[in-house]
Amino acid sequence: MRFTLGKDKKLKGKKAIETLFAQGLSIRKGALRLKYLPIDGKDLHKTSFSVPKRFLKLAVHRNRVKRLLRESYRLQQHHMPVSDNSHYHLMWVYQSNKLPDQEHITQLMQAIIKQLSKKPESHKTVS
RNA sequence: GUAGCAGGCCGCUCUAUCGUUCUGAUUUGAUCAGAGAGGAAAGUCCGGACACCAUAGGAUAUCAUAGCGGUUAACGACCGUCGGUUCGCUUUCGCGAAAGCGAGAUCGAAUUAGGACCAGUGCAACAGAAAGGAUGUACAGGUAAUGCUGUAGUGAAAUCAGGUAAACUCUAUGUGGUGAAAUGUCGCGUAAAUCAGAGCUUGAGUGUGAUCCGCACGAUUCUGAAGGGUAGGCAGUUCGAGACCGUGAGUAAUUGCGGUUCUAGAUAAAUGAUAGAGGUUCUCGUUAUUACGGGAAUACAGGAUCCGGCUUAUAGGCCUGCUUUUUUA
RNA sequence: UGUCCCAUGGUGUAAUGGUAACACUACGGUUUUUGGUACCGUCAUUCAAGGUUCGAGUCCUUGUGGGACAA
Image (cartoon, rainbow, N blue to C red; front, side, top):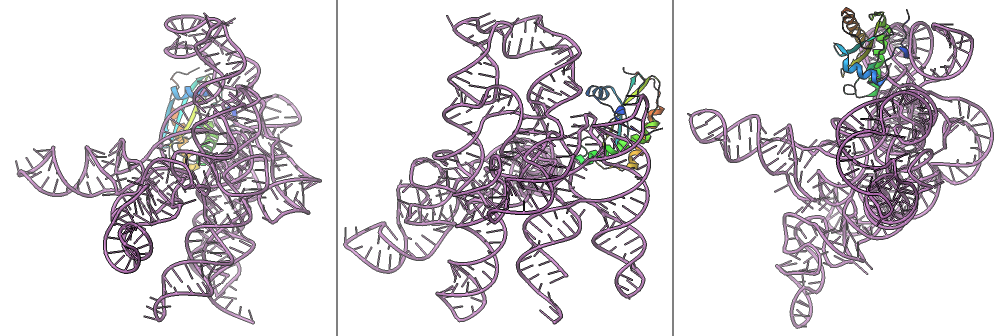
């Protein structure tokens, strides 16, 4: 089992992201919010990370948080639920004006993934 | 040695594991190798390069600059110099019993958006008789007579070719506009459709954005309404007014010549995580010092077309010069 | 990435370079048996720092914060 996070696992394209925000569901734990949308067809999970300028003004701090999020997801990606006929589009959003550390981010992400796994995949998928 | 001021420079290092963007190899499963943020990358306050619009032409307006000389691709930047202002040392003169006060000069430091108010217009609160076509209080002087003259008094400024242009303005010089979402090209897709108005060579309008002229285009046209489609790839894009070293010119900014070197290129956007070791600074304890051990801190901040400046943020450290004070010889 | 605008009591707005004004709110007081109304008073480092000027909310420069726009 490898812990890579290359370009093939990133969510790209303006259209895909717009539909994710328009139709996606969300889970929130503390300062971390996950937007997710199940998609038809077997593929790798596509993920992306966002930190609004509203909470952290400096580019250095926003980059720092995104790097921590990316690192946490890289190490926990295999806990995500896997299905044969669908995959997820994901967007992690950090919503706080405090700079977190790695441990804190990891705990939040673990809780969210656990909650996502519990949910039945009965809701409809988007092609 | 201590403290302060000014200028310049550096701005944490190494190892292991797991990852990340680009490039190159081996080759289609991936693996290996190399490279990978700053002095401000920031603010966007100026100036350019580059691209397009007539390789942008004339006039006016607008805006900017403002002693003199130089540097530069260019500038509102930089260098030199003259002047102004402030401060300090020394010193001269005047007043005074002294303390001290006032005025000037040399030297040093800091600072300075520094053309023109004998072209015109405007402005000056309060105080004051009077604030720009002047007017007149008290005392003294003077006259044939009169604010005619001086002093006092008010004020930032009181007759002085007055002050004020970071007041309008004038003078000189410069200034076309837009801005990588520029621009070119490939691909996908739609509606050369509908409605209303204008116009069809006697000209509606368009061509980049202050106006007019001029120039070019112009009927398969132009404007508006409602609506439909796309919003992807590549080039531009990183070799350049480049960086470093030596040497010549110049007071300096800067520049000539020679040599060496290639140093980010992402696009929901690459530098991170974890563990360990070591620097540096501060601090506590043990110790006669050296030293040893514990704890804390290690800044400001992240490229997005690229350069030259300016401004702002910055833990800690180094170098140079000047001043203050202390100790030793 | 680029362009533009704004900032004055708690709130909304004024002010030609010359004592920062008005309305509402809040607080205190007077009137009233009490409350309301009415009247009186209080509440400003004009976003910050420099500069020009005798004098700056106003003019100039640089920052800070907020907002808008560009296919």
